[in-house]
Image 1: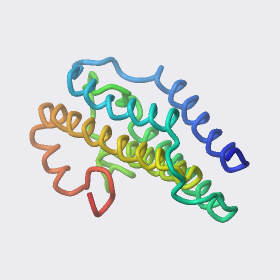
Image 2: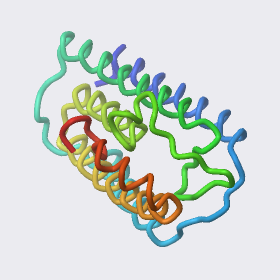
Image 3: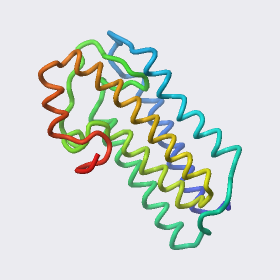
Length: 183
């Protein structure tokens, strides 16, 4: 169903894409790049998006105004989490699994609570999509994106542990991977 909620959610994703593109030009140079793990983590993401676009599947729930408002709030919250985390990460950020020149271990702001808040925010945004959409494909999208982020996070953590052998294991002990206080 195409409605105001859908338009708002699309605008959130468009704003995120523009912000990501603009800020991607102000990052540090890459010192080391992971290849195989980066590629493997993208497969569930791509499959999830294709399933979402090509297969709606059965309706799990029907859209309502209240559900639409909740979907908007959840999506916007996810967007705020992603923007805050991306801003905190600053010049250390990359869409790929890389280690930057003069890379810093960021453990402030949202990074005090979760090691990968950008992925957390993206998952929250996908929950907003799922609430608005109501089809089985949106649940499949969420699950596959979760798997993709989990795989990518594990590869990133291997690289960070390699370069921060003392600091990163200590950081891992005091923070959760994707969901604050839980996982």
